[in-house]
Length: 356
Ligand code: COI
Image 1 (tube, helix red, strand yellow):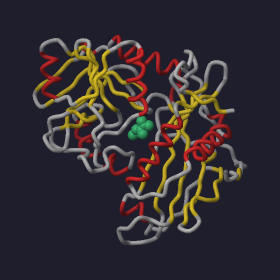
Image 2 (image 1 turned 135 degrees about the vertical axis):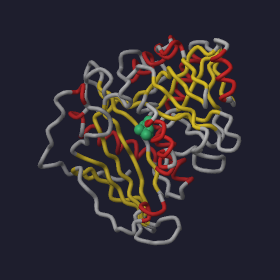
Image 3 (image 1 turned 120 degrees about the vertical axis):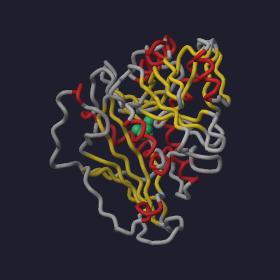
Image 4 (image 1 turned 30 degrees about the horizontal axis):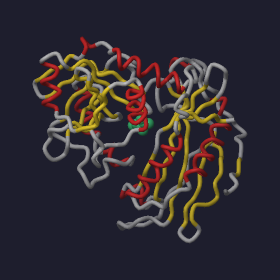
C-alpha cells in the first residue's frame, strides 16, 4: 500500500457552534484527500492536505464532457464518542462500477477505504454530535486532461471532501411531497442511470426546478421508454407498502443501486417482511392509493436516510399517503438504520467500521 502524506493546516477554521443549523453541504472541513492518476504511472501521490481551491485548465475534460464519478458516505459519532462508517466497502465497490462505466481507471478499493478512514480520523473534531447529524463524505474523480475532444482521459484526480451535515431535506423525518415526472426522463437502459455520475443529476435539474416551483420537494422518475414504470426519486430509491408487500423497483440498469436501499431490504427481510424487487407501474400505485391498499411510501438514500413520502402527484391524481404522516414501517426502519449507524443498536449485520 502507498503511504499517504499528511500536511496539516496552519489556519484551522472555526467549527460550527450551533449544530442545529448545519443544513446540508454548505460547510467544508479543514482538509481533503487528493491523489493523481497519470497514464503510465497509475494512481499515485496520495495525500491529505489543507482544503483549498484546486487549479484546473479551462480545457480540463471533466468541464466539457462530464467524465466524473462520485460517492456519498457518512461518518457518525456515537454517544460513547466512537466514530463509525457505514458499509464503506460498498461505496468503494460502487465507485469502481461507476469508474468502469465512465472509462475511469479503477481504484484499489481497500486503499481508497483506508485513505477515507485516515481523512476522517484527521477531521474527527469536525464530526458533529447532535441528534441526526454526521460528517458527509464526498469522494469523487474528475478527468483533468487539457483537451478538446471526446476520449477517455489519461490524467485524473481522486479527491475526498467532508461536510458536517444535518438533514438533507428541510422536512427532516416529516413526509415529503413528491411530483411524478411524466415529461422529462432521467435514464434509459444502456445509459448511465445505474452509476453515480454528475450527468445524471444534471439531467434531473429541469424537472426538479419545475417541481420546486409547484412546492414539491423532489420528482419521482418513470422509465424512459414507456413512462409507466417507477424508477427512483431525485436523490433516493423508493419503496411502496401495498398491503403486506413492500415493493421497490428492481435494478434493471437505469436505477442507482443504493447502499441504503440494499440495507433497507436486508433489514425488512430480517423482520420477516415480504419485500419484492419488481417492476411497479405508477398506475398500480395510483390504484392502490385509491382503493386504500397503499399504506406507506418512503425514499432511501445516504443523504436522505429514510424519507417518508406523504403526498404524491401524478398528472391529475393526488395521492395522500397515510394521511400525510410517517408510517410505522418507515419509522421502524429509520430507527433501526440510524440506530446501527449511530451505534445505539447492536450491529448484528457487521455493517459498521470503526475509525480510530
Ligand atoms: C447521497 O445520498 O449521498 C447522494 O449522493 C445524493 C446527493 C444528491 C446528495
